[in-house]
Length: 250
Ligand code: TMP
Image 1 (tube, helix red, strand yellow):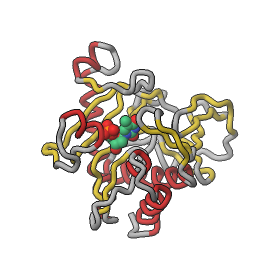
Image 2 (cartoon, rainbow, N blue to C red; image 1 turned 120 degrees about the vertical axis):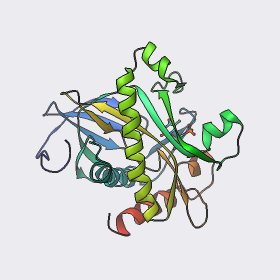
Image 3 (cartoon, helix red, strand yellow; image 1 turned 180 degrees about the horizontal axis):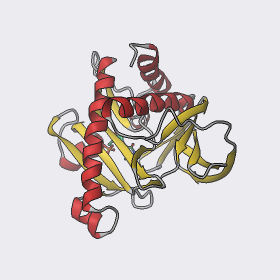
């Protein structure tokens, strides 16, 4: 299990291990703990569009820490999150990332609406779970179960575990957003395995990785504002942060 109770203390930041589009991951003096620094950089369309969202790193770290706790407490899914040593920074359990991005969709939007030629906003029943290969070079191509198994990205048992965990994460996070007047339209999560082989929710849950529509106005309050040049990007991220962390208690 991760989270409170085994919080590390007084770690020192070691060498950079990995730099992604939105975060840098450093080693620490404990091999089982990584130090994540969230960036203000924003990319879309597989990094063909690049920009900066002022304050995003600090806001997304706080949102993700909050939602990781919700996932652990309400969803019963263990996560990599340990603690927040400074604004915009996290100590997390070191994991080997499973190279399967898990996308959960309640309504058609984004690449799904484009792929199937359906209107954005169309409700999806049942909830759609999709796998994509985690590969920036290949543009994260979608794959089915047989492809993931045949190419060695995950076993059948692992895919079943990912599907169950994704549904539990979804129920916890969608419920929390609902409490603050936000509809979770879709999101992407990543999982990893710790040194003992336990599956943990990893990466982040934030307006970078979720589509969130305001229940009252229908307005997107997420990275679609950046992708589609809708304006008010920083304000949207701050509004999600305000509702989750200054609104009703979790
Ligand atoms: P999509 O409709 O563009 O496939 O995106 C589905 C969801 O996944 C959406 O909430 C945004 C999120 N997402 C990421 O977090 N990272 C990515 O690289 C992509 C393509 C989508």
